[in-house]
Structure formats: structure tokens, C-alpha cells
Length: 447
Image 1 (cartoon, rainbow, N blue to C red):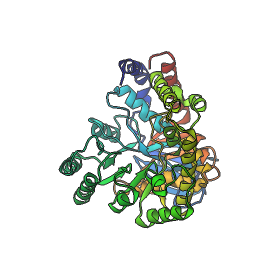
Image 2 (image 1 turned 180 degrees about the horizontal axis):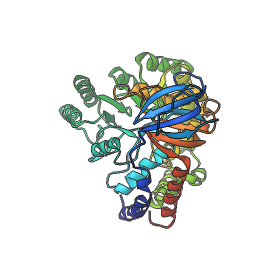
Image 3 (image 1 turned 90 degrees about the horizontal axis):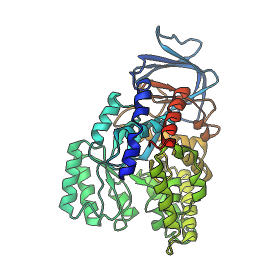
């Protein structure tokens, strides 16, 4: 990270000191959401007139408002006319880059939580992240629950099969939640990684290296295919519309092997160069990111799309094919996980979910399908770690209180009344107060 950016990030220290105490105190031992409509996300239903009681970091009870008994001393949240759903998962997110200040790390975590993102699977490890995961879990830092991939397996980092095997064993012993696959990994090195991962019991996920290919990666047990990587190449659809017969074959392979896919639709339009720079540059949420970082995003995108080798028509064709692919996977009952690849390239932590929801809807997914990919399906994927992803007794108290029904329109997740993360309640007024302070700091050039 550039020196100027480090200096910039240091300027948020005053902001953190001013507001963090109000957000990082221990959660109330008991909280009650009164007379709320529950969207449990165990199906496609809304249950009106419920009281939901939270004890510590767990949902303790869900009962009709007319009969529920509110424990003495409970924090009462008047929720009549509002909707309570599970917190959202970001299944391809990132910690801030290596070298980021502690203040910037905490700001990024807050931006996730501010938008109802209560779980993040961070997909690129670096030294110190395991400690951050534990600090968040203990409540020392306010942030989403973190599940962490270790340093990546790529063509640059892995030079032999024995090295791949050794790194798998090391990352398992160190306590990473999964292995991250990056491009460039040779097939025999990938296979050594996959075999050793199965032996020691650690999952692996990420990109599809060109030398490996989609079908072989799935056969070797890669659990998630992030960014729909490898599908367009498998379909032979980099310069032409999707072949429907080949598409049906890809959907069948994905469904029958139980492979999970993470679309990251908006970010990939940017990666391809199919997005509109002027529109992205006008995103209001950019004010929550360091100005130097945003400037780098803009200049990098401009450089790519103005290159003599850039093919805009091809970029748009691939972007369109990805929409066709996502719709087919959804209709074909493939397991879709929600992700946006934040923070990077106009994908601002937390805020990026609203653009991703819109993109998934434009691809043809229903509100329930989109919401399920960010709630219940996330809980299903991480069921070996904890119980969450639906509003149910005994589940982690990650909750999103809304002013409008998200089953009518998934974009209603932006109409927040507040967020609860592991039993800690943040009202929308408190969230907006801190967001204003963050934007103010960057606007003063202190970021």
C-alpha cells in the first residue's frame, strides 16, 4: 500500500476513538423484537405478529406477540410494521490489504455490518488475519463473523506437488478455514493440493486454473467455484452466445456434484471492462473509501479499457453470457452463494450487496432465490462451523430489521431499521451517525 494511503488511513484514528465505544460494548444480555413480521428464510414465508427474544449471541425464542413473555430488563425494540430476517453473508469477500492500518480494518468491518452483512468468508489470507478473526469473535472489534481462506495456491506460489502438499498441511495446522485456489496452478500441483486437502480434512475453493479446467476441478472436489470462473471457457462462450445443450450439461454437472457457485456479477463486469466508468465513478458509497484507493480504481479501469488490445464487444458478450449462465444455474437448482468480492474495484464493503442484488434480479432470479443465496444457503455451507442463516431458536443472533418486506423486492434489504450481529444491536440512527463521520474524515483528506 502506498505511503500516502497509509498516512490517509491513519487519519481515521480520531473517528474510531470518537465512535467505537458506542458500538463495541458487550451486547445486552436480552433483547426483544416486539410484534415483528419474521422472514425466517427456511422457505418463502412471512410470519406476522411475532416477538423474537435474543439472549447473548443466540436467538432464544420466537413466539406470537400476544402470548410472548418479555424477560425483565430486556432491551425492547418496537418492531410493529417491520420485518426481521437473517443477516446476510458475503461469501467472496476480503480483509483489507496487507499493510492496512488497524483503523482502516475496523472501518471496513463496520461497512459490512452497517449494510446487514454479518458473515464474511474472506478469500485471501495474510499474516495476522487469524488473530483478527478471534478478536472479532471475542467482541474486541465490531465486525461480521469471519471465515478465512489461507494464502493462495497459485502458479506464482506453488512450484511443485510436494510444496502443494506441505502448504496444505501447514494451513490446516495453522487454523485456516479453507484453502484458496488462484489462477496459474498446474494440474499436477492442483491435484496434489486436492488429494492432501481431502486427507487432512480442509475444504478448497476459488478460481479454476486454466490447466485444470472446470470439469476436472469439480471432479477433484473443489467445493465452490467463485466468480463462475471456468464456466464460460467450458461452454466455449467467450466470443459467441451460449450453446444451450452445453449449458444444460454444465448445470447438470454442477447440480449433481453438489458444487456451490458464487457469481460476483457486478465485480466481474468491472473485471471484464463491460461496466460504465462514469456510472461507477458516481457511486455515492465511494465516499466511504480512501480517496487514493478510489483514484487507483478509476485510473486502472481507464487504462484497461483504453488499451489497444481491449475488445469491448467481447467483454459485453461474456457479461451477457454470464447472466444466461446464472439464470440457468438458478433454474437448475444449483447451489448459489452470494458474494461481491469487496473491497476492491468499485465494490465497497457492504454497499456492494445492493448492486449485486440488482444484478442477480436482472439475470432473472426471484427475490426469494436471491435472499436464500445470502442467508440459508450460507448457513448450509458453513453448518459445520455454527448454526445461522435462518431466524430460528438456537441460531446465531445475526439479524436484519427492515421497513419493507424483502420477499416483495430483495432490494428492500437497503431499507434498514437496524442490524444485530452476534446479539449486538445497532440502530439505523447509530449506523448513519458513524457513516457520516467516516465520510467526513475522507472528505477532509484525513483518509
